[in-house]
Image (cartoon, rainbow, N blue to C red; front, side):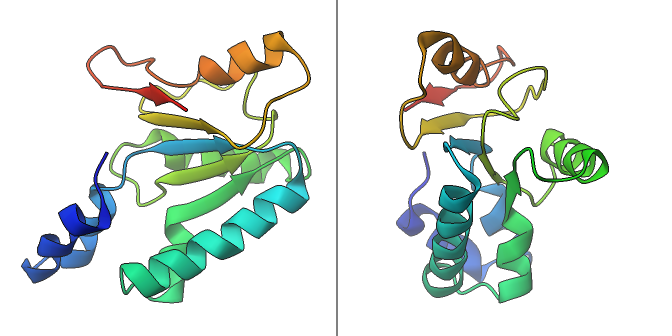
Length: 140
């Protein structure tokens, strides 16, 4: 997985921001609650702005939330953007609303912020990574 040091040399290219964003692996981070998602979202935006020197609008385009409180249309739009490998949406903060019935082939990394209540939910979350056999995928 690329580190900030791996991405930093890309700043010198003519498409620096696009290259830097493309280097961020498609990642889903699972949380139990909307509150946890919003706290993580705020922190990730701060990190993207300070460490990668992105403006706030670009940082907000990279990280989005996916949870049951969003409208079906909003969830579908987010799903479509995240499913596109060339989209700037690289990190999805999600509750189990994403764990069942949503198929995204281009996920490289799935992170468990905390453990779910049962093994079935954990397996659903685990199954989000590595659906494309041509890609390396990690479950943390």
